[in-house]
Amino acid sequence: MLRFILLILLIAASCKRKHEQQPDIFSLKEMSDLATVEYTVTKIIKANDNKTWFKAGERKILMSCEAHIKAGIDMGSINRNNFRIDGKNISVQLPLPKVISISIPAEKIKVEYQEVGLFRDPYKAGERDQLAAQAETQIKNSIDSLGILQQAKANTSLFVSNFLKRLGYENINISYSGKQSPLDIP
Amino acid sequence: MRRRRLRTLFGVAAIAFVSIWLLQKINVLPTLREIFSPKPLVIDETPVLIKEIRSIGQLITATLYDEVVVDSIEITKGSRFVRSFNAIVPFRILPSADKQIVLVARGKVLAGTDLNLLADSSMKISGDTVWLQLPRTKILDAIINPSGYEIFVENGNWSPQAVTAVKLKAREKMIDHAFEQNIIDKASMKTKAVMEDFLHAAGFKIIVLSE
Image 1 (cartoon, rainbow over the protein chains, first blue to last red):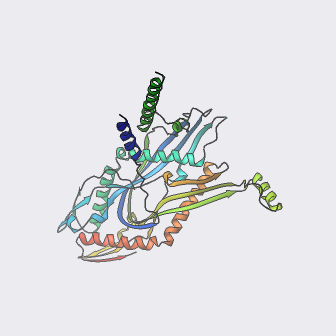
Image 2 (image 1 turned 180 degrees about the vertical axis):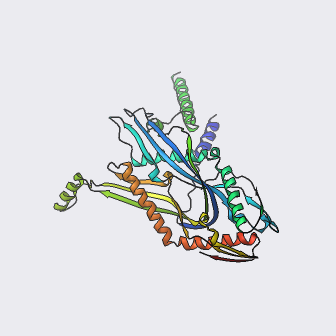
Image 3 (image 1 turned 120 degrees about the horizontal axis):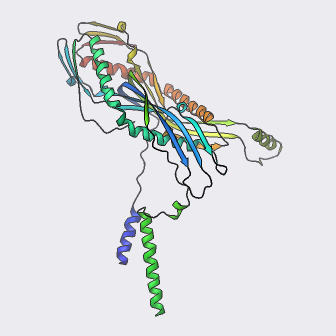
């Protein structure tokens, strides 16, 4: 019995926490993304700080934020093999669209209302940022349901078609290939 | 008899201790630290509403990932008194009462070309040769999201508007860094390379690009 308990204790103590991955800072990266659609979305950030039992009184805050989400395709993965040309007819196979960027500008985050109890401190900037960061995560998680990738597909087709028309092609056929990767938002 | 009772008591206490410890380890029971630490502030789930959908044609060809530190100090009546008092005594007695904020901002600057600005006159075609005058390469976006900010020092009460002004300063600083790193030249070169590859693949043999 004692050996069993010791074994469990040893296994539990040896569990290590995962380290968070940090993005590369101070690096200039080349890319080739063609953004064809920009969504502007809004969200209300609502929080009530009344869950801590030893803090008397509550604090409520209501903020609003606006985010800009851009989507499009990676032009870098297009090569000669993606084109079929026959006189004035052209067929292009493009990579599937992806989310290119999400931006929540600081000036678009506004405190609409706040109520702070008599025995409580007002919200600090760090706390407000923390709430906005949670909203950022919620916005990222909801991107799939906004239909931005479908819209990016339609806009990219239109953009590339118009460009190829200006290059002299008359019949343009655009298709997409590749695997739709899970939303990996940069 | 007494010894036996003591041993039983000890055994029960040991089993209870190990059980509680294990239950805390698998998050069934809260730890003492959890009981006496403030609960994290969690926002409610609210819908994301689409305000606008805009067609764009931005070719993003360079991104600078950066981290900057910005600060702001406001001298209040109280801090003015502390400063004057410290100035007349031989060494600093009172701690600073200035309103101060220092923040670290992590984000990225995107540069490239707005292909929507391509005019009809910017493209000329003759056989398998194409002349293309690309719009000027520029900074398309400077992004610092809420998760990219870390408030390092916050003394005094800072209004949301004052904090936003400091954050805008961080964004400006990041854009300045991007210019120092020649982001425009690098983005311009990459734009030309991407367009050249695309036009070659689209069947053109001679491509003349200018900006």
